[in-house]
Image 1 (cartoon, one colour):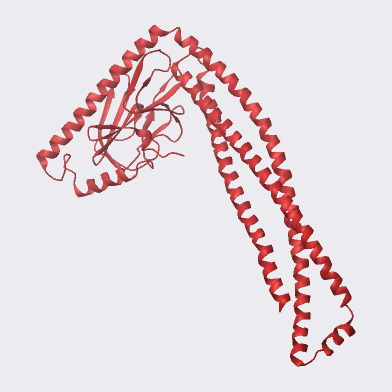
Image 2 (image 1 turned 90 degrees about the horizontal axis):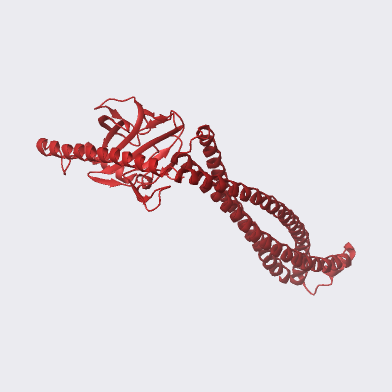
Amino acid sequence: MGISKLTNSKLVYLLLPLWFLFLTDTHAQTKMSTLNKKKEQNEKDIAYTNTLLSNTLKNKNVSIGQLNLLNQRIKARQGLLESIENEISYLGTQIISITDDVKALEAEMVVLKQQYAKVIQYAYKQRNSHEKLMFLLSSKDFNQAYKRYKYLQQFSEYSRKQGKLIAEKKNSLDTKLADLQNAKSEKLVLLAEKTKESNSLAEEKSQQANVLVKLQKQEKQLREDLKKQQKYAKTLEKEIEKIIENQAKLATKSSKGTGKYGLTPEEKVLSDSFDQNKGKLPWPTKTGFISEKFGEHKHAVLKHVNVRNDGINITTDHDAECRSVFNGEVTHILSMPGLNNVIIIRHGEFFSVYSNLSSVSVKKGETVTSKEKIGVVFTDQTQNQTVLKFQLWKGSTKLDPSLWLYRN
């Protein structure tokens, strides 16, 4: 019976480390997959920004839009470098961990081989069938003979399992050694990649600084442009507030629903659904990035000057489609100086506003669905820039659209 207890306890002792190694390898693969995805996304962002810049740089005149693109590329490049550094750091941790595993496996292999050598020696002594038979016949009684017979069976099984475990350990060790070599090779590749990206970042920062210097020399023109933009934004803000106020008055007169805006049961469901989709709304353009954030912030060039944005600006591809971010009703289509065409869509208590459209493909009173095309974003040919101005309102309260749109 002693050999049976030894076999079971030894199996548990040897299999637990194998299971632990399996879990560790799975976690490592998941971690590296996550890091790789982040790096790939940063690379895509850089490629996309380069595409937009290739059009913008055809124009010899520098612009804030060009500076925004350069800033976005630098941001993506810094993100890529951070991803590479995280991978290098993680691989360094993995190399240490794998090295420790290799040492542990090598130590276990030494012990296993020593134990197996003793088993083989004993088996060699008992190799003769005559000796096994005499071992059984020399028993005092039947019970002892039976125990000796079971002992020989268990010993044989134990010997087989020991040999199998040694083979498994050897395979695990070979796998770990291969993993170690791969991790070291990958780390060397990443270090070279980091050097390359660092050089690219330095060049891009130099280009950014040159554009910034040129723009600072155009301070007078920039102030005039800013004054016009603020005037257009204020006009739109007043128009939206007037529209929302009128919506509330009409709701009060009709008394068809509940609340300040007289929401019908269907509109209440739509409004609640919109509210529940915060952080999940599709972007109003298929591609693009936020080139100007919501709220008050420093001007990109002018010192000691703050600008305010009631929404966000999304720089996108030339002639990009504009899409509704949610199901709703087109309540107004406006034509405004400096903002071209503006579409306002109501989603219950919420309103989405799409400005700077070159053309509109919906009509007032029309019902639209999420991601449905509603127009085309205007492309400024003088600067080779395509920028959608997007706002979200809840009643008369302005919302930060970046908090409502889906984030990768």
